Length: 417
Image (cartoon, rainbow, N blue to C red; front, side, top):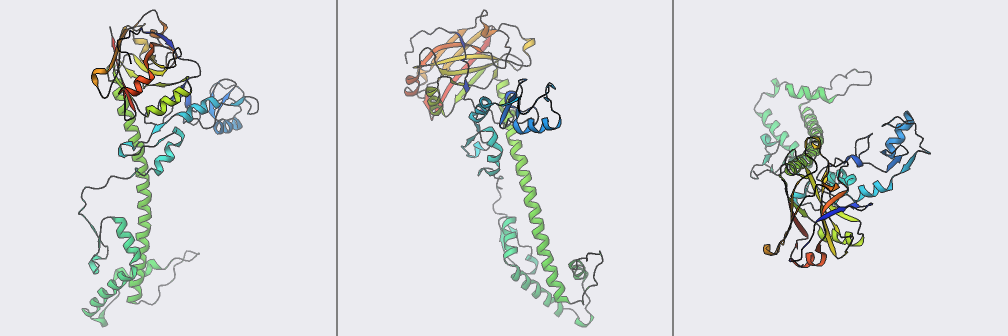
């Protein structure tokens, strides 16, 4: 890369038909252009109406069967003549890639938005945190009558109870025999718990009447009480499994929402200092070299919490396929009406050399108030950007230390003046 070569910044327009390779920030909430107005979720099998609105095919089909008009503007629609497949939007959604919310635990998989929920449910890293107190062990429920087994977890104890029922019955029988020796057999009466077990054992008949209890026998009552205890434990285990599964699902959703909140907070309060880490760079570069209309967009970042919002675009130069083009684009915010237009400020790029910081490529440019690129944006992302059409030679970026561990790092600093 010729670092001494002078580059002139200029206004650039993103070609029509671009495909953004940017990953969605860790959230399963779609952008408005990918959201179905009926189910408020990602468009599944998207279709477009003659009045220009997009819906899931199943959602609009069900809606028209009940009402016959568009949910947005009440125009009468027919499934046969007014609904068309939106393959362009379908391809865009399928090309989105989202990191697993358990990436910090080691999951490297990146899936489409429509597959994220199903992946989370089966992700091998979606496991509850293990306790730091590994020495604490759970004693067997029959510890009082002689079982000395201990276990690392409740699940291990439940398996032990299920497997060694006969052994536990023997413990109970021995304990009961000792009680008989220590008591006057002739004056013994049925224990209240045993009587309760006998009553619980007899199920009511179909007419709602309970059968009279059978002749009382201490051994029979004890065995039935044990069987009932095992049944109750199994039922409790199943209920606990359901509760744990629901809690795990809620924690997964909370983790995703928390990551998105933290990421959005960093972008809003970065004060115009943004570091863009382009991961999986080799695959992204191959996609751009194969199709020059594909390009990378960074997340939107702010010059101040309520200030201007920019993103960075990296793509193969349309004038020179051997070079990268690098531009910034203004993005729409809820505070645009309070800002001064056109934007006036200084924009600095730094492509980081990760092996030799002295070779980092730095460039600075000033905004031009006469260009459309710095006027108040009328779309989500301003079509026109500002930057360098021939920013860096592709081969130099790949070979000269700018890519490390398949990551390219570009630092951007935007300051209002």
